[in-house]
Image 1: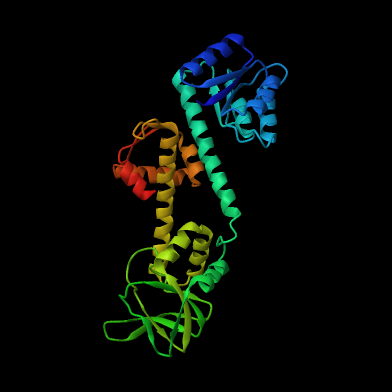
Image 2 (image 1 turned 120 degrees about the vertical axis):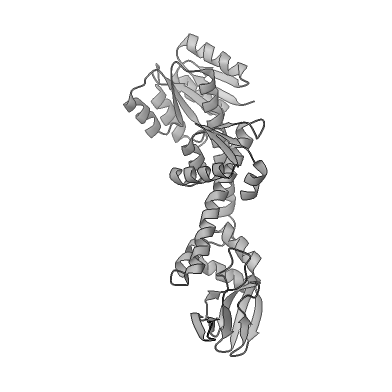
Length: 349
């Protein structure tokens, strides 16, 4: 049962709202003014705070400021509840960090929907903070391109090829991604007249063989040693997993490949798009799990909330949702999103 702290100085409204929330399945704690509310928030650590603005002792803005400054309470979602509807008051509350703003009078569905949405968002963000904290303490995390090369040195297999030896041929399956320890490698294609077209030259400390790592396709070029070479290789599958788990490295690789052939760049861009789809699908599933008793029930959530949790721009999220809708994966009606094909959504995520 979720714990709600209701801070409201109007006795009748406080009692009626508390009763409404209790009938909706929430455990409700009440406070008659802002000063008492701050004390109860720090004492009970509720799942969400609903707070009036105009109150004696300490107004709602003061409550939010006090809650936000305390490291123990600053992540508790906060909803303003007030009859003040002027635009500047709404803006002030949101600028201070409020999660939502509901004006009186309000409906039961409006209030409970806002509470469920904000509690779910807070739970998801808490999980992500915990995961990020674990990730930042992981000494083995690969953060840079040099870190990736160190990973090759520590975990790769050594391959040696004499001068003018083919390392892999065009249409060979891409089994390994290579780091050159010594020597030089050329990648080339043969045109219809049998003429060799050199596409790229790789030198010591360069990575190569990864133009197809975003898909399970064969090499589009032949790689040959120009001099005696020593390579360190890791499997294409392992390399792909590293890139998917370390997006900063993916960005560095895109920069590294900026002068390479267009097919290589296109595949990296396709990977970036798939990443957006994956984030969107995963976020929808997270909200469905947090808000709904049944995953097929509609999710009442703002696009900006979905986008902020997914870590993408709202416009990008909307385009992705539209794509999911066209594919028959979800149904969109106003603010509601209903999952139609949960297995396909899980596959994407």
